[in-house]
Length: 83
Image (tube, rainbow, N blue to C red; front, side):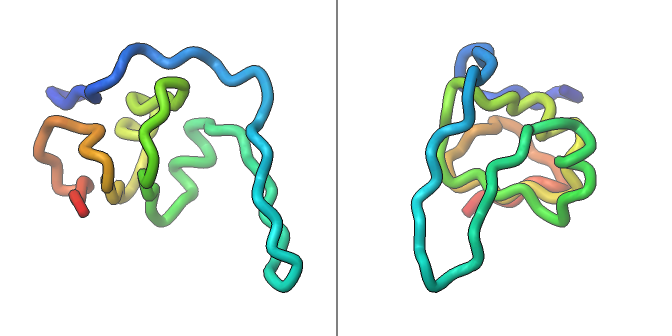
């Protein structure tokens, strides 16, 4: 991870996507699998909750920009913004 480490234990793969909340007046959201391709295609990855099953190494390796509101990462990187 290029000198950066995340602060939680190794991820356990998700066996099923968690349920999504529903807001009838808004566009329906569908979960997507967290892959290198999905992360690389994203303009920004916003970390708003810390989960032990998220592959934070994968996010760090492939994200163009990371906004980390949970202090997941312990390093400095030009792509990393703490909020």
